[in-house]
Amino acid sequence: MTRSREPSEPCPFGPIFEASPDPMLVLAPEEDRIADANPAAVRLLGHPRQTLRGARASALYPGQLAALTVFTQAVLAKGHWWTRALAPRDAAGRDLRVETAAFPLPGGPTLLLVTLADPDTVHRRQVDGEAEAYMRAGLSEWQRMERIFRDIEHGNQLILRAAGEGIYGVNAEGVTTFVNPAAERMLGWAAADLVGKDMHAAVHHTHPDGSTYPHRDCPIYAAFRDGAVRQVDHEVFWRADGTSFPVEYTSTPIRDRGRLLGAVIVFRDVSQRREDERRLKSALAEVDTLRQRLELENAYLKEEIRAERHHQGIIGRSPAIAATLRQIELVAGTDATVLITGESGTGKELIARAIHEASRRSARPMIRVNCAAIPRDLFESEFFGHAKGSFTGALRDRVGRFELADGGTLFLDEVGEIPLDLQGKLLRVLQERSFERVGEARTRAVDVRVVAATNRDLRAEVASGRFRDDLYFRLNVFPIQARPLRERPEDIPPIAQHLLTAAARRLNIPEPRLSEGDVRRLCRYAWPGNVRELENVIERAAILSARGRLRLDLPDGEPARTPDPVRLPVAAPDGRPATEAERRARDRAEIVAALALTGGRISGPGGAAALLGLRPTTLASRIKAHGISRDDGDLRRS
Image (cartoon, rainbow, N blue to C red; front, side):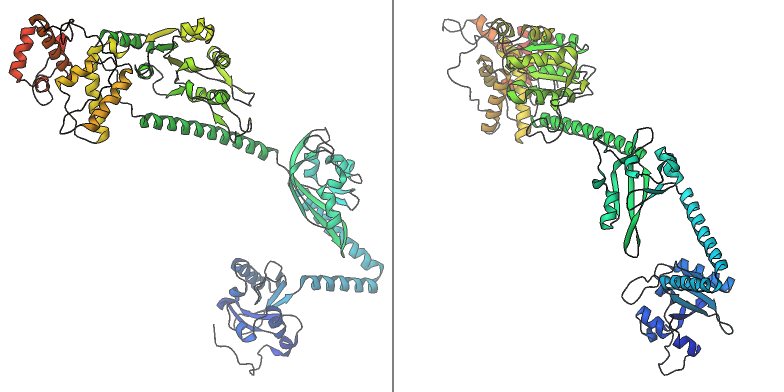
């Protein structure tokens, strides 16, 4: 700011500047400064004169520096210029709609005399002046005015023709007054066929769903009643050939001295945008489906981790385990359906997982379904998924287990528990390899390898009518039987040691020692609950262990497994004292069991010698005396 002039100082720009009814400013453009403002400008802008004097000119036009610079250069170059693009801001923060005119003041530094005028006032003056001239000049002036209006109309027509959007006008009765070329192209009508006719009846007569669109409901016609601008983006216009296209339009009422004369409608064809939106929506839906699938797969994987599966492989050296491993190796490379049978706790799911991990589908997940835990009314939804709103509680689309397992393996655990009336639906999917979600007509194809497991005798279930024979034959392509633990006692020591190591790690305790006596007790027990029961006994013993010694708590009253007199004899069958041959057989069996438990290690910490409480040299002598070979114990020294 420069020093303000006192009110008593004379105005350097003369009495006309002071007395003019038009708001005037004197600008010093090179200094970006307001040199002075007359009283009319002070009233218009609402700032005190002392505030305006010396203030930056650009501050009066915030955000308009470029336009102000262009205007100033035009005045200096042409000697006079005017514009309506500049809007000074008054003391109340309002941008004033004015017509700005300026010319340079002669002599001295570069100064511009700027006049701010109300455009409406300027227009009225022009019209009044032209009317006065007409009154004086008569017919010749009227003809000149006609040419002026004709030129204006010609300019408007040029604008209408150049516009890329459809534009048409209607009067207050809905009759078309003009149609621009873009509207002709989009609607397929010639302007001559529409002008003078009911536009609504020609292009806006029907809703997108085919129902009739009455005049009284049309937003364009509503503009004639309330004078409000309408913006609509969910309707269609109809072409001359009877086809429709989606439009987005704005209807602006036309007024003259407060009276509504009609409306101008600007519209555009949004077909391509709607198609792009549809494709985007479809792509987003597909992404959402994939996201749901990944989320569910992730949930299943987390569930598998939480289950703390202790077997990273099938443990055991018995002939039964060897036979099972050979069957897994044979069937894993195929897509044949496998039916795993066996008592509870025998490791049927472990066999299923081994088949999956050895197959070409191992990169995809194995999805487990506990058929016994699915409510009857949710069976289809659980297996095949459902569409949003297909039943009460279906708040969103849901991916079923079959779809989740696409490309992988579906493990149907306890398949014998599926109700008879639902077995047919499962059979159809297994046969056709396709399904429909509940509440959806779309058929989805799946590439799923099915492995089923049951602890029931499905042949007996079929004979009794509780299981469909066609489903049984579909599942029983390649049967595998999981042998109970009592039929493979030689697998008990290595399984027990594996479970003990896992339990100690899980419980975060030092690993207790599995003694010779512990092994004998475990091998004598019948294990009606199989490996699952053995796992529980070992974990309980690890919790109760003290000073590194296990405290096995085997249930009482369970029938003892009849010991194999060759593998693990503990006494003569009639209760008499054991003979030397029986004692030697028992000693040999205990050594073989200890070697199996320690992986053939004789000496060192955790070796068979330490397990039996013998010196390594003593154990080596007994191994030699009993004729125990590497095939019996896989002997190795630490």
